[in-house]
Length: 356
Picture 1 (tube, helix red, strand yellow):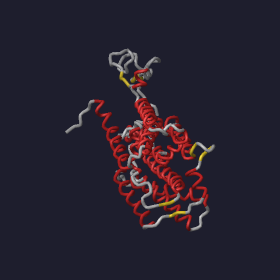
Picture 2 (tube, rainbow, N blue to C red):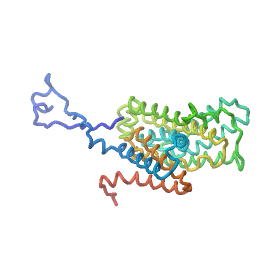
Picture 3 (tube, helix red, strand yellow):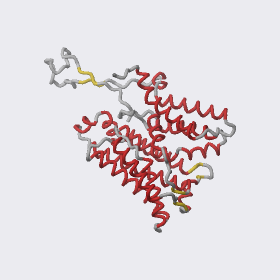
Picture 4 (cartoon, one colour):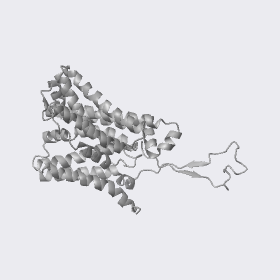
């Protein structure tokens, strides 16, 4: 939902149109509130938007990598670079809705690992290859349902619940796997995890674009999306206005689990195996994509467009670092710094001081 800049301003009691005036209640009586028009978005407004800043940051990273790295601008290299972030971005889309709704799911990497293990068990049990996607989705939905029940039915904080369940899910995956790994997945998973459309565009990236369009439509153009913003801005007021707050939260947890299951299907097909350390630490990168994309950690604000710009920016930076043979540990440092700066920068720009 686009942020509404309308303001409700009560009329003066001395006004002829005031409810206290003698003319109140007549045929020309007006509401006691005046809704101001939304101001036009000028150049200053466009430049001041977070998405504009992200677009400029993306261009800066793209141009810098193109100047410093010899093969960065090769079209095939750029296309292959999307493999680095497509699965994470698929999880970032529902995570954005959760955070807008004042919730969070730290367990997404654990859900992904457990979904991948479930596919390995199903494959060894003789399940048909086409059913493995549904095994991953069902496992993800089950994990998301557990998170949702604990948060909505028992009133537990989402961050505490999902910190616990990430250990639970990854622990279960490690117990099943031990020091082994599932390999030998069917060709259909390889086709979707490593395949291309027209021998050029990775299938994973196309799937990401399709889901980004769906999430953007739902969040910005439907009543369902407007209610998510309403819950994020004031859950108590949303509940009193008739919105079933817990039902929306429950659905979002289940949706996040399902998208983690889809990411597990694509990632397992891409790397061709399930190992105990699969997707280790992904929750940090997913949350960084969402927060860097302008989604308020306090809820009630953010756009899918901003999240996608953050995905492309982070993908460009990390792919450039990998082409420059920078070790992965330094990429983790960069992502951690970006997350801290993104959270602190809006507060610093507003000039607000933290109460001591």
